[in-house]
Length: 479
Image 1 (cartoon, rainbow, N blue to C red):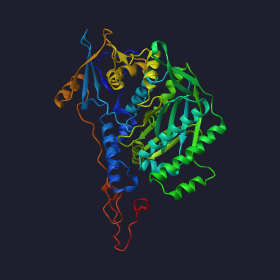
Image 2: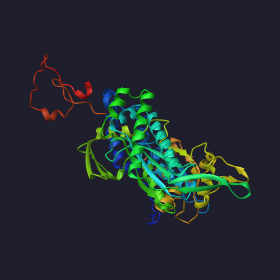
Image 3: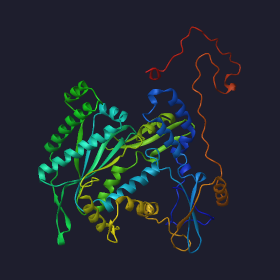
């Protein structure tokens, strides 16, 4: 979010410093080339995503995110009348790194403070072959099927080792790789052991946990083979792939399926668990790694890969937007899923929530002897999520009054155009809307008048057009 503070008074080093959304490389790149990308996508089927309307709405909404010209919320200090103006966020998934970062912080904080008791946890990462990623991208419901099969097999794996009980599982479906490529895979944060319900004092149920051991190489390889067969069988049953494709993939010496479960967080390491959760819920890319070369029309991204190390990727601006558009998730598809003891209908979930809330000092789920729904608790927490998250992540309280140290409270949402312009003029900010460059015409074919500066062709007679000449075509467009 972008906040506007009245007056020339400088901010102290420990004060909240609002971000300048319009100054980022991604914003300037989209301003200059979004219309060109949309025009190209309308004529190039190969470059079109599976949900083009959602992509266009998300990219256009990003250009309004954190821009005060599109609306403001006024925070006011009751003691000294100091004001703080905050712009609205777009809250779009995939297109806005700022909103994705806040969403990742919300998810990690909520899971740590209200869902996960203090036990050991293990990260399982399931990667599917490249041949299947196309089908999962084309049919978004298949990503949920892969996550569901992984949750079921992990539950059976822990049951074989520890007996009766249920593991707590949070799955994060990621759609991106380190090089901004479409790479659909699943990160699962799973309790490294099983939870059980047992009778406590005065007949009140209590929570018991039995830890497990780290998986061996043979156990992981066996799990991988089981998942490979079950995923291919499920895809065939759903009609996503033909039986012939499944038989071919089962015959491969290297299946392309990969399951990794070596990363673990010990009990008591809450900071390590929070880092793991944020890593699994992180945005697709970092704006700090992106550079926009306006004159050349290029986007340069410094990718960090665990195997290949630092890599500098260079794209044309339109090509970069095309890559970004493929990472935008489809509408109404959850990328964070809860299984096992954290499943929506699990009888163990209230006990896990109580244990986690007692550990973090959060408000319990029961107040005044009346059971509150988790939705009500989430709504109450979201009302203070913005200031609370910034305080936790950046160690700066944005709702602390800079003049008297009091607490700022929201008093008005400014949505009328005239009032927004008056506020911005009073604060000395621009009252103009951000402008997008129009789409450029495609390169002129031979024999047509080029859309260029006429001075470049002074004194040069253009060649006569040849009616029999074939205009070269783009093979990608024909395909």
